[in-house]
Length: 224
Length: 160
Image: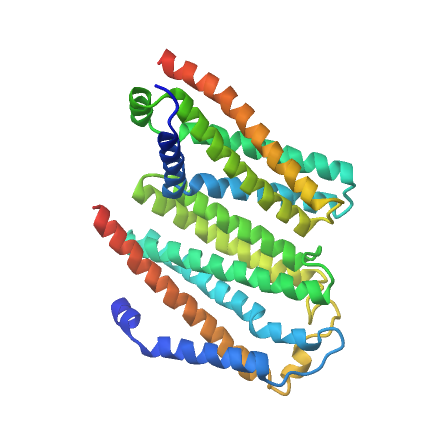
């Protein structure tokens, strides 16, 4: 089944259409005017959606790690690693777009905010995941240890990104009494771009991940 | 064997290849410095006066330098070391290693400076002068640490 989905072309076309739509509507579409946010509200289509794509890819990483612990097939381990790598790419992209945005709305690229602190901590946790992977020479041992680690890492990331910021006041829009996106989600104008953008970024991540998986498999085949 | 420029260039290329083949060292170096900067950000909460800023910056640089240089000697296998011992002049090997580490530390220093400027306010008045000092500092750090570690290391190899 995995080969049929990897070789199917329709979702790649869908990803391209969604991303083209996101870029077109994101830069040229109508957005509501808000006091501080102004035009920077367009970052919702890029920054937030990249984080969503990152969360989906990290979830894939955790799922394939559990799968590997179940069946011990090297394929699951390769997919888990490449999911984490792609998620890091989206995480860094999300961080950079967020910093550019924060520079114009909050006046500084990095402020002391529970959401940002949690993000930085979880990025460091996943960077440690790659160090752990590189530090172990034996293939099966590396796969087993990193699978266990990535399950813990995923739980930590959910706590850091989704739970702790909800418990504290955050500077982010829609939290701690700040003007949020929810008010004008009612006219569902922004949702019409937001959801396709999430789908588009996620599919792009999966697409790039499948390339990386194929490269890694070929490299393994070559070295054996 | 006397110094030859071609050999020197080849050895620097060899260092780069080693680093690219095994990215673990450079990743852990980056994560080490970013994590320590982040921890100091969390504990200082933006109330960092310029003197402590400077102390913190150079302490992080010093520890990163010791890590990086010690690891660059341990990375090569014993067989490769014997191979180098037979074919190359020791001056070449140590010069190439020192030059490579100077490049590595300068790059790391610039990354650290960027990370510091992201988390803290920059108290630096003259940025160009500071970067010059940073480059000279990484030059000094890597040459002194290289020669120290090289000294211990060759003794260890001879004792084996």
